[in-house]
Image (cartoon, rainbow, N blue to C red):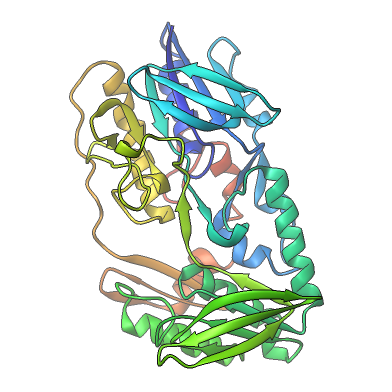
Length: 386
C-alpha cells in the first residue's frame, strides 16, 4: 500500500484532498491518503474581518466540520489524524505528529503534501490557531472586547487591516457609536505593488465612514491596565505617543506553519523552499502548496492556483511521469472591501470599480460558496464535478 500524506485541511488542502481522492486514490488499487490537521473544522479566513464584528456572521458561516466531509471515504482508503506535524524526516519518509489527544504518532509516506498554511501573528483568529476550539475562543473574546469598547484600534496596514477597519468603521464609527482608529506604517494604507490610486481610495473610503487614520505610525508596546489597553506608538519622525483602547485588533502579518521541517528545507523567512514544480527543493516526493511555500506571497489566489496545478500533476508524479512547471501569475490582483457597501481593487495595472469588487466579494465575502470549498467541490474560481 502506497500512502499519500497531506499535512493541512485548509484553503490549499481542501480541494486537493477531495479531487485526488476521487480521481486517483479511489480509482487505483494500493493507494491510501492520510490527512493530518489539528483543526476539527475548516476555517474560512476571507470573511474574518466581518466576522469579528459582533452580530454580523455566526460561527457556522466560516467554520465547517470536517468529519461529515471525510466520512464519505472508506476507511481502507482514507484516514484523518487530528494533530499537528512536529517533525519531518525526509530521508526516512517519516513525519511525526503530535496528536491533539496527547502522545505522538509516526506516519510513513510515499508522497507528502505540505499544505500547513500560516498563522496570524499576535494570536489572532484571522487564521486557525492551534485548534478549532482555541480559534473560536479567541474570536469570541475579541468580539466581546469590541462590543464593550468605546475605542477600537486596528493596527497593521495590509489587506486584513484595511478590511477590518472598514467593517468596524461601517458598523460603529460612521454613526458615532464608537471611535475606530487605523494605525498603519505608511503614508497610505496597503503598500506597493498595490496601485497608488487604490491606496488613496482606501484612505478616502475609510475616512468617509469616520475611521481615524493614524499614518506613518507603528505600535511599539502593548500594556493591559484593567479593561483598557495602552498602546505606545512611534511615528516615522521618531516622535512617540500613547493611545488607549478597550479593543486592540492587530493585523500584523503571518508566520508560516513550518516549524516541523528541517532547517535545510526552509528559506530565511521560514517558508519551505519550493520549485516551479511545487516540489520541496531536493525532495521529489514532497510537494508544497499555499502559504507554507516560498514561491509566492501568502495570498488566497496563489494558494488556489497552486492547488489547481497540483490536482492535475500529482497523478503524473504517482505514475512516474515528467511534471510540467507551475507558472506564477505575475499580475497583481487585489479586492479590498471597505465596509458593507464600498470596495476598491485592481487587476494588474488597472483599478477596478468599487461596485464590481463589492458585487464579486464584498456582499458575502465568499460565505455563499465556502461550504462547497470546505468540501473540496469548489474553489474561488473553479467548480469541480460533484
